[in-house]
Length: 262
Length: 320
Image (cartoon, rainbow over all chains, first blue to last red; front, side, top):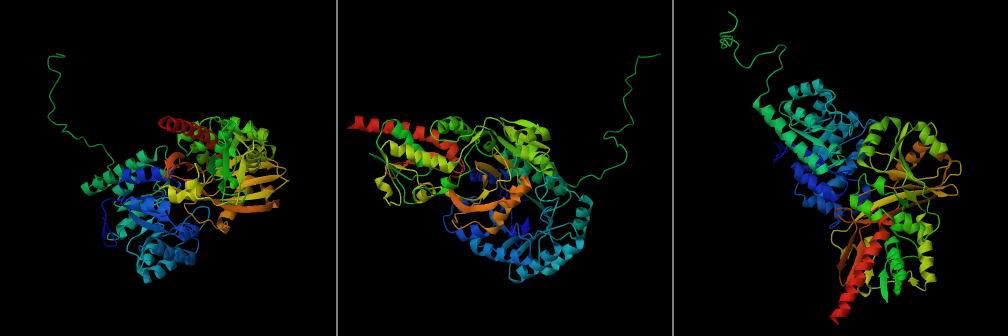
């Protein structure tokens, strides 16, 4: 998979929040095979994230590529400032752009999102916008300069899977060339596999792994599910049919009634 | 004389344990008499609730903590602790129940029976009857007083080269000497709210960090604590203060009338697995990495350290 001219060996992107410990987190990253991990930056962390500060060096040591995010930002301005700080701190111009429109549902604010995306793209950022399945918003984000889109599966942390699968599928059809990453709302490996089977390029998740009883095992499960779903998609899935279709011929069956009734 | 560096909960527990075994100890701290992360602790002795995220080792270390504290400091309350979630976050409560033991499920009337002021506020909760809480500040003062009564010198505002100490319990200040030790920032509020009566720690499940309200008596409540991967020691941020306040308000709207006595932030020392360690480094013993479990694990760790210390002294004596 290629995102902003970087080839990545895995189609799973993993969030790094809410793990029981950094040790479990690094083991989960390894078990998932994720090549990209997201990190959220808060101001107090930005002030302190100097060389040798423990958590950041652990993340950097994981070998995965860092995708800083603007989690928790509610305005375009706040998100732009956070992105600028993240570029300084992490030394990458990749940014997962998240502008929350509603404190309760954490759904993206598409207006502020497009505004912030335009500013950041102009400043040379490679923007990964967290958006809805809305096609018009997607087109505006592409106009703003985004080359990757991250439509949601369901509200953040809800574990509901693909809540509007039909709309996501039509987004996929309309934008066949744009890398689309299902971000947020996935609760089970089967849901991640389904997203991949529908032709999405990758999935990004956090809570389902971090809050699992065994985060490392769950990370492994998601890694396998994402790989399986992608292989299934590439192999060409059979379309559902209304009627049963036998997989073996019905004609020419051997007559097993020999010597039975006269 | 055994010199112990750091007069937080780890240093005080180690000094107390050694002094109780008849060994001569002295305690030195570079800061004020009481300060640092321990001064801001919640003071919950909650081995089962902490089991949601902590390794089983933490619960093992904390199994006898309440007894240890009750024998030495006043005000250890064995009233259990309560975990509640807003009704719409019931799934979060189910998840918490599945991840922990030592609880029993309560419905609305069960919650009201335990904490009258929560009547009608939550449909479901978890009661951990075996847990306890204490006022960490009173406990630290009592340990220090107990040591002084035994003739132990406690020198605050005193800088001592770490190499001159025998046992190092400085918490995050020892980071330069302990590779892998990191800071986890925590922020807390102290409120005065005589209009609300709660008698045991209440944890409100929150998507980002566990928010708890711990009664300190006389209408005083501690609200804590944020968990940030940051070594910024600066004052509480507005966002954190708002999150803590809104958690208190969600628990009981009467907290709107509370006065804010104090806001504070501190740095918890933690290793990558968030488990405490006793290590020998730089010619001295270190007890560090107690993370958010200082009052829960320090007594058992102090005993382990005292044992190891005695064994090493014995071996050194034989070697002579």
